[in-house]
Image (cartoon, rainbow, N blue to C red; front, top):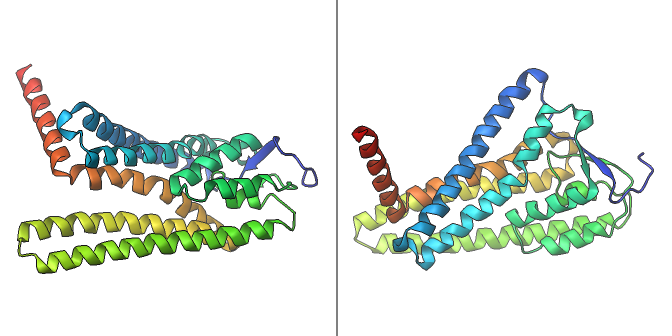
Length: 273
């Protein structure tokens, strides 16, 4: 099978290497995390959509983040949960399904170079059949090829990743320097405290995402650390989507007040019954 070119045929997903004893606890843990991510992000969307007081550009922008988080988590976790309960030799996926998953995985991370990288991937022939990852991504698809042209893909991938990370880190640094300058020159202690609280939590989520993303990308070139890479890739898809509703939802005054109001109303109704 290794010597056959089989676009549109069956691939084997390596997935996570877990023992039978730990598979069910891991399944339950990831299922609870997935449920929390879906419920919390959908809750933020419904809350903003149904309250006219929250119909402004800032809160509509908040709606985009939960939608992206739901998409990024859903494209990875449901299949990963099923694969945990399967034997490692039965984790099959078609090439077409793998390419579709790859596209959404990269749209979640960054849409700027998705079309380019998918195009570079599809031009390659394939002589291998194992996806050395818990899910499909461009780097895993590159590894299916024996073509010399895969070097071009790796070079373009590294360059675009470095540019992406550099521009992202640069913009974040500029933004936080400006915020720090405003905080130092402002005498409003309440405003400064709110800015520090919001920015610190945002920075923590951003650092988790950027570090896990960088580890996921660069450790694809170091097979010895494959399990570390798999862990980082899963964190990239569950930690930010799980924390974003808390950071951007509960710390936003209008949303927090609305949630407290709803909670208080439900509590009164329960006590009244």
